Length: 329
Image (cartoon, rainbow, N blue to C red):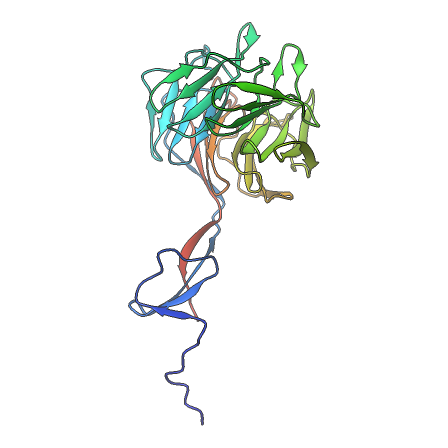
């Protein structure tokens, strides 16, 4: 009879403590805890309530991450420039807000270095561009080349792409590029002119999805730094939706879909090729909300939920890599 005692597999590393920087799919045996462990995806894919905004608002902009987000602009009974900061638990109202109060601006960047541009304050769409340094907004001397509201945007405070949107002249397909000090109108336009779209990615690698062309659309387009390409559409046509993520790993949620109820809480995930509808939707269905984060850790806050505005904040937890104990029985 062959004695198997003491024989060890050669493909599983034996360590006294878990690796500090494991790779996906890695398996090891922890000799201190006597546990077989691995590094793999934990799939949660669910929305949970977060800390409420201090002021109920709709048509606000958002940027940043799930634990360090920024909300600014929007309206309740009047158009406001109010700015609030989220620390992963609660919101804090900043003493000063936008220099140009407006609804439906777009935000890019981080909680401490953001860009706010476009929007609407009667009687006109805005070209106004403002830079946020973590405590105050500074108006840039030059704004967008074309005044627009509900514009799409992706990137950072120093490198942003603005696309689509609308003004009294109609729905737009224009693309503009920001270099940190000024905007340049690009000759490349979107294949589907639209407003109120979702957006994700960077200045040179962007994604635009859904929105309104005059009718609701589910169309998705991908930007490679020089041109727009139409790719697979979302499952649900909607406008004024929340968004998070990158060009190859995006999240679209909530929005206005029409019908009854008119608002949606539906969540869809983009893998770089196609959209998949997740069965878990937001608890507070709404449109015209602020949003921030990534495909695996997103934040949705404020919005029109069938009333003038809401303080509701929800946190999305998707698939995330984590150390897992492997059971053998």
